[in-house]
Amino acid sequence: MVHMVTGREWRAIREEVLRLNQQQFADAIGTSRQRVSRVERDKAEYTFSELSALQNRIGLPLTYLLNIDHNPPAWLSLYATLDKAQQRQLDGFILAAIKLLK
Image (tube, rainbow, N blue to C red; front, side, top):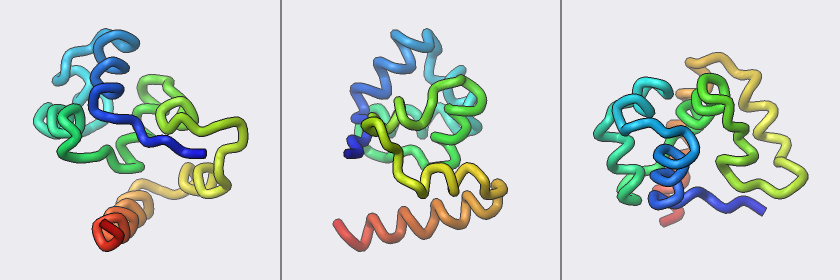
């Protein structure tokens, strides 16, 4: 079961767990402070690349960030094997698919 993290939960992770301000958090995952703010207001979602950066730079496992129960899906491991350009391309496809489904 996958439960995406809400904006309120992202803010709690950033402030209470990581003890970072929005700019520090943005710098750590390679995004802008404005994007962090939009995610925390549920106006945007982090890309898989940004989630991967959280895992690599901050040490939070994707299974924690996505609240995945005991058996993470196979795609999660495969995604980690892609290079940055492939991850960005896949992120774009996934975001386009999500928009189509809304």
